[in-house]
Image (cartoon, rainbow, N blue to C red; front, side, top):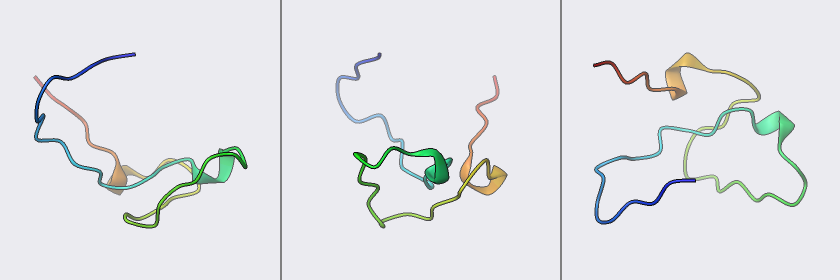
Length: 47
C-alpha cells in the first residue's frame, strides 16, 4: 500500500482484468474497460 501527498500527475487510462472483478466492486464507466490484459491501457514506466 502506498500513500501520495499532493498531485502526482497520473491519470487513469483504463481498467484491466474487469472480467475477474468481484461482484462487490463497482467500476465506473469513465474510462475504457478490458476483460484481461490490454497493452493499450497499460503504461510501462521506463528509467
